[in-house]
Image 1 (tube, rainbow over the protein chains, first blue to last red):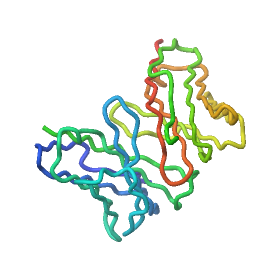
Image 2: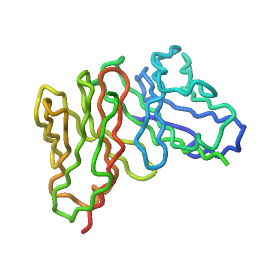
Image 3: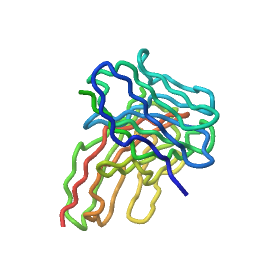
Image 4: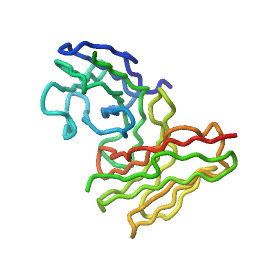
Length: 116
Length: 110
């Protein structure tokens, strides 16, 4: 069974460029979560998506950040016009069932974004 | 109210010793408390989790103790091994998102 897959594992961008991070959930999981981990900090929730729907985006910055989870294909976290403060590890997690706190979230290996 | 406070920030334990990591929360709506283990360069992996209707849960060398009235919970690692060296995160949830503590870096020396 393949776990959560994320790519790329490492991404380097210059200030002002766009970053696109991809996440393929565990097979059979239709719920995807994105978290951001700044150096030496815990993970911070960003957004929760189901297929074609954003359920909770309370942790997403208001500007430059967007996320989608199309009917076909991986979930995408998109960061436009990146700034140095966007440098972090971005983790995707998936779960099988909807929105219940006890549903285990399985995490991917993360994408480490470096903004020069 | 959405915070989960975790301590200590780092912990050094000798092989065979007991590692204890503590967390505290404010939001009484939280009803699920998982612990995640993260190795460098990897994603967090679920270690053990507890619901507030029990005071203790044990899985192998790992035990969660839960004190609902004090709104605190802790992870105990018995017979700590060098392979346990990692960063440990407590978390809490009431709906869809996990609220993580700031992490404890555990080093177990042989």
